[in-house]
Length: 233
Image 1 (cartoon, rainbow, N blue to C red):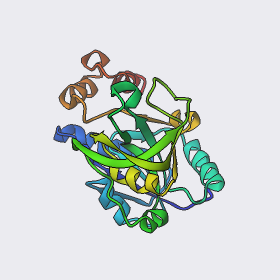
Image 2 (cartoon, rainbow, N blue to C red):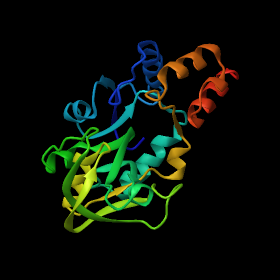
Image 3 (spheres, one colour):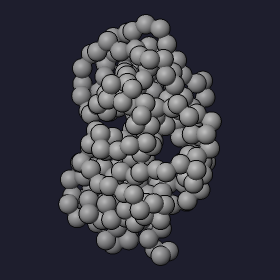
Image 4 (cartoon, rainbow, N blue to C red):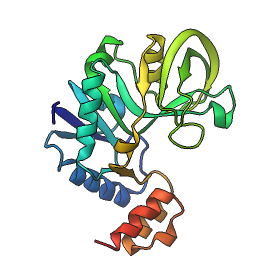
């Protein structure tokens, strides 16, 4: 590990089932503790960034880093991009929902350089809303990791356009893209090192599936994979 990271676990998407929340919090903490002892729990991404210094790896509860090689990949990324602001799951919704829709930083996991965040004026992360806003223009990679909405990178460019802003991350995105910054997506190697089980989605069903070790009780692919794996423990 070349960089000293802090880790933050958040409940930004508000897992409604209290028993499931405690379960995924404990599991997220358990996996993270194999990488570091510098772990804090917060309610939101904003709290996590505000109270962190240096590089912070923010995870929503239910994000399990299962392979320690993840840190090596992050080390390599930072070595090649020392002035980065955010490494995150960026989603470009225009190809899926139409040109009026703006982009998203999904909250399941992100790596934030708090020094650059402060240089940008400490922007808020930006939660779910539904408004028309004037936002910075951007360009993106032609390639996607999957489907049409997972570009390898996005970068701010000249001008602004009115877009429908719905999805989270708009505060970080507006600040970064206004300053022509590039935000990279997690690489395939990084993605293979973790699993997010979307505990905010059909939480009661997921908790029942975990309790009964029965993947047929859930529909989400990641949830099925996780519950199926419980039978091998």
